[in-house]
Length: 65
Image (cartoon, rainbow, N blue to C red; front, side):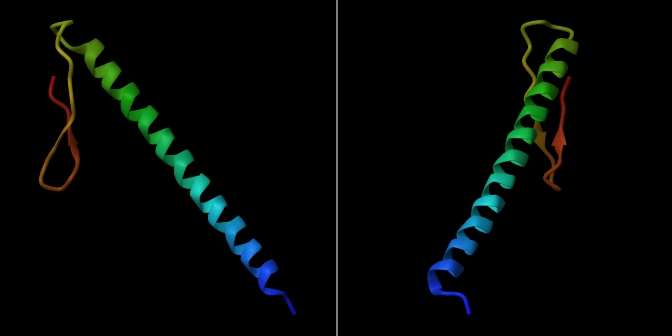
C-alpha cells in the first residue's frame, strides 16, 4: 500500500509533466504565429504596413493584406 507522500509525489510529477507539455505547445504556437505575421508582413505591398490578425465570429484568424 502506498503512503500518502508517495501518492502526492506521483500526482505532482504528472501535473508537472502536463504543465510542461502545455508550455511547450503554447510556445510552439506562439512561434508559429510570429513566423506567420513576419511572412505576411514581408509579403505586404507597403513595407511599413504591419499586419495583425483579426478574428471572425467563429474565432478564426483573418489575415488582411
